[in-house]
Each structure stands twice: as structure tokens, then as C-alpha cells.
Length: 189
Image 1 (cartoon, rainbow, N blue to C red):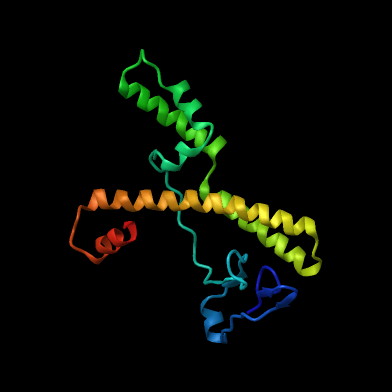
Image 2 (image 1 turned 60 degrees about the vertical axis):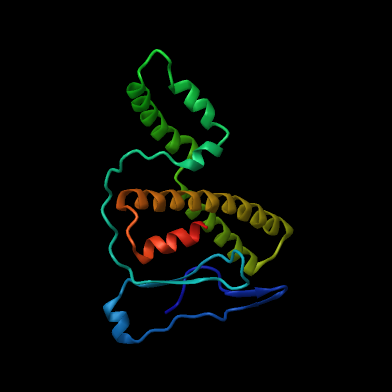
């Protein structure tokens, strides 16, 4: 099927090989003509994850309501935003509305979209892996380490986001006696 991304899918020390592949038959390719295979960046393993996409259609964009993210509190600029927006002379409702407006702007301009940050960092790491497949250098190795540290922080923020979303589901759906909620409780413990 071919692939997009680094040529080598496995690396240990100075050894590099393309071990992992995707294959399909003509019927499958006729059914999914826009499919693709992507070699994703290696993060903790010595193998690249391989992603097979069927090439389905993208969903339409819908305006989402404002959501406070718990990971914002760890950002060094967040406290300044809150003190600038919150005014004693206004009532709580007006302060909340002002915070929602300014918070949404701050999220776009300063904090950034976690998914986009993750995509950008993964793309840069993928580019470094491609370059290292052709020629290794200390600069590329150091840059890759730095980007992986940045990615670890973004992944931590993403985990916080998903944890927050899962708890919101629990609040909305109640404590039903389902496998999902039992699994959620076990994961939290």
C-alpha cells in the first residue's frame, strides 16, 4: 500500500529497518480508494506505530460552548488573565460572561488548541525522524529530545482534558450500574 512518513519503522542503536507494513487486496482498495498508511513518530518504543486510515469524510464543524480547562491553571499567564477580567464592581454573572469571552480569546491566542499543538509537535518529530533516516546529527538528536519533552507536556494537558471530559460524562449520566462507570472508577483509583 505504500506509506507516508519515515522509511524505517524500527530502530535500536545504529540498526534501522523497515519491519512493519500494511498490505491489502484489490477489492479492499476499490472499496477504500482514499486510504493511506502512515508511519507515526516513535515516542517510547523502538517501533513506529503504523496508522491505516480508510479515508472517510470529515465531520462538519459546530460551534462549541465555552469550557474551562483545568490545565489552564498551570499556565503561568492564567492568573494574570483572571485578575484582569474579574472586577469587584460587577456582579458575578457579568464577571463570568466577561471571563468566558476573554478566556476563549486567551485560549486561542496564548494557551492554544491542545490537539493542534500535539499535531504540530508530532509532525516536527516525524520530520526529524525522516531527516535522521538520511543523516544523523547531534543537533537533530537534541532537537528531537526537546520536542519530545514539549510533547510530553502537551500529552499531560490532553490527559487532563480527557479526565475532565470523562468526569463530566459521569455528572451528566449519573452513577448508573454500568461497566463504563465501573471501569472509570477503577481507572481513577
